[in-house]
Length: 125
Image 1 (cartoon, rainbow, N blue to C red):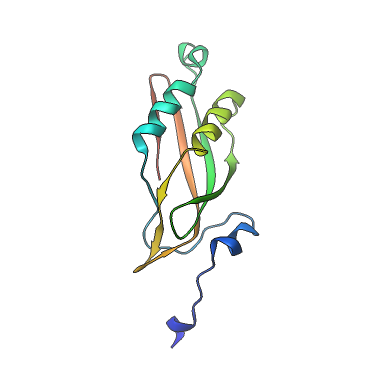
Image 2 (image 1 turned 90 degrees about the vertical axis):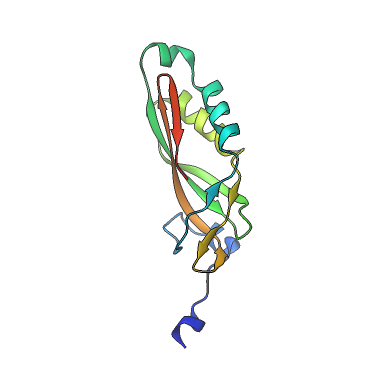
């Protein structure tokens, strides 16, 4: 009976709260990986790459039960404004498959790291 009483928070519920870990058993999955990788490469300032400067930006995403991105915000800055801006621009274009909790889609807050290294960009979802 205990499991039946558990109510999953909706994306609307989560949107009113500060980002925090949300219960799920399967991570949301970024579906437009190639598009985001190309955008990050375009946005990574050449002067920073030439200087060997990279960094990591951590972004919070609120992903709803359909995989739609409701909100995103910076969790940790890279320390370089231009890298932070590049990450936020890419965030606006990210599309996901929803997270799951056992057998059903759930709304979640998740952290996505975006890594800038000279000659490469990477991210996880």
